Image 1 (cartoon, rainbow over the protein chains, first blue to last red):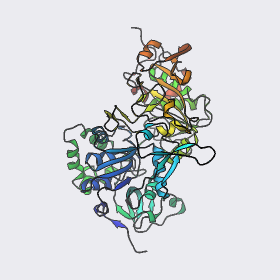
Image 2 (cartoon, each protein chain N blue to C red; image 1 turned 135 degrees about the horizontal axis):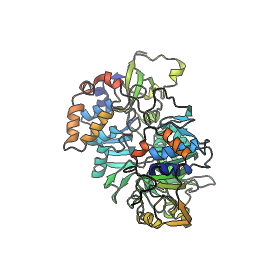
Image 3 (spheres, rainbow over the protein chains, first blue to last red; image 1 turned 90 degrees about the horizontal axis):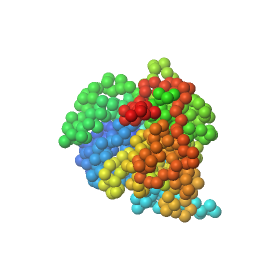
Image 4 (tube, one colour; image 1 turned 120 degrees about the vertical axis):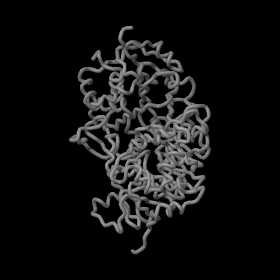
Length: 293
Length: 265
């Protein structure tokens, strides 16, 4: 095969359109495709619906006014439990929201990946997840038990952004951390998946044990972006840990007047190469200690 | 141990809720619940399953905070997030978390506070796994500061975890798996074992009165018959807690890290 799916981050993000529903892989401050998120921050994209087990990806997109609607179960940075820019957006009432249980959220991605309209679940019944969401309906079992379930609608994505440890140019990927989270389902739920990768290979050839770290098929991947340190400041096991100093500074910026603009001017608008230099370079990032939970 | 701290007393009280649960996943989220689950596994309930709080099952609870360079967790299996969900839906779990609000029906809120859901006064985390946890398996709660902002007078602002409020349950919805055990607070231990699942105080921490607890709670409480004192940790429990928490992270949970038995005024 001679074809390649490799693009630059800017080319990859230029494939997206205003108003799209975009899923973001990872979990809280863990393995977030931050280089791609920063590229969205630099782009003119707007009115996005973001679908995410949220961390600073959600906070930054909210801060930059990119988010029209958030589909989520939580937004957190773990060691800093409350995400400041998500809170600002949520408390100002400027974003629409659809709030789901973590497992319902998985079910929605799974339904989309299986081309189903919904999947039944007990999760959400008797709570405000159901009561406050006009989109959600229940369904009764057609069998003798007649039990009533939530019909969790498919969370269909126009695009998904995922950061991986290794990929080749045609989209064979390896996730080497302790947990793939639900990135396989984001890829399946999406009609257009952009993968950013720490290490880019021409073609991946690995042993059977390593091949088990491949969580989804390459036909699910449309675009591959080489982005070393592309999850920074989030945790990419086993390559590097959270950058707590950076997250603390980011968190503190939210309590300053014009804090987001200052953060964006210093770290985002300068471009990815300057970003990496400002956070200490690949050398420092590679030495960020892996978290102990 | 009469010189135990209140945090240590709460850890000991929390550990009791995992007694006689059988073989299931004990998930204590944040310092005191996690130490409670760990203490249960190290003492009366070795059959409990626990994770390293990341992705693996461990046969011995992992200590909190930075570890010695030569420490290797005793892995016995795998428990990634998708497997945690599978475990939740199968019901083999007892979790203890700290919600933002709890109401008289045992309903909990971790999402947002204030009357307007579209524009809340305070956004917290989101519902997280509470809807699924609460309807599928055993749950207990932890409250580091018992007051009427947590134990609200009316219904919680955003019902994230299910409780025993009949009006919330439509025809055909299965309530049988919802099972709220205890709430461990800095004043007492509560359950929902009264008539129609009314909240009851089942033990008072040393020096705390029932009236004090009632005044700090937004809804009426029942005192169980022969209401007694929450047990202090034994010397054995105290030694295990210290081993599980070598950096004394438990000392940072409660404001001022007070002793379990308050000094005479």
